[in-house]
Image (cartoon, rainbow, N blue to C red; front, side):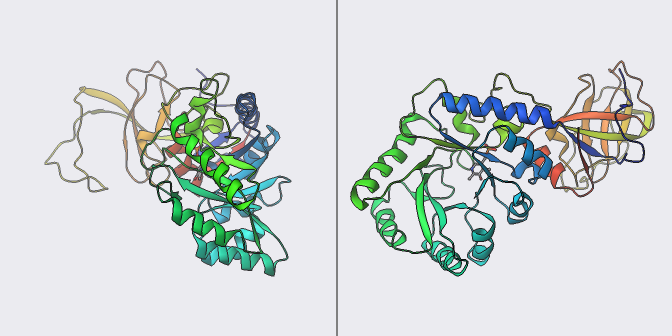
Length: 368
Ligand SMILES: *Cc1c(COP(=O)(O)O)cnc(C)c1O
């Protein structure tokens, strides 16, 4: 087992850090794009928010054949601005950011007339027509016009299509994120029904019917989804997971992003603390498994950068015990590796872990 990686440029070693494998990320994108296109999804938005739209990673995704890059934060949208691809703003805009939304996004997802009016006015001021996708809440109870309040939606639609600065190019939905509702033919059909009714009633053409995020990927290859022609994919591309049932997507990598942390203490200690137990640093009552005296390793990374439940050591024999703000505590007794001070330990990250570690300014980001 090699602990010291040899591709590091001397003087450029700063830990903790995330190694981003650009080629693997591009490969994952290609796999997801192919899978979607084979199932009549004609346009795909690649979602960059989990890695804070770090530009080299966003570029790799773009090169994997996406039609749009999409993000939910304005700071991230600005990072994407140099890339030659259409951009989509995912979170419902704040009315106060209307000007930036029009400036940095070609398309935004919307559900509130007041905001759409602000976007329209900003677009007119910037001599643009801003494209919008109207969100329909199919029951997951996050954003969107509620599917069962059809009259409210149709009345709003009538008002929106009259605005000069915005053009409604489609409908979208977001599922699984809040309520855990799984996308199925049954609920997604309602989105297509709305499209058909609106086109008939208002004489408009709605090009994009955006059927959700990585939780819709499980339908590809299984269910025909007539009418759904766009998906917005983050986790499926970045980690190779479909997120309705948590299955791996074939022909994808789960290690495009690897966290490296440096060992700062190695000692044999009991597994159970000595003394009366109060609350830990985060106000929780800690609990311990007594495994006897164990070899404990501390890495210099902590809760400020990640949650210890969101990472998996590449060395499968390491047990993650927990983390305080700046210390990650591991049990390496069962590992064949004799970890020493200054060694680097590698971890895979799940979605939450990656989001937090990429957001942390204390974690270096490096592409390989
Ligand atoms: C985050 C987000 C996505 C992407 O979600 P994944 O599960 O990572 O694919 C898609 N759409 C919206 C509106 C989002 O906020």
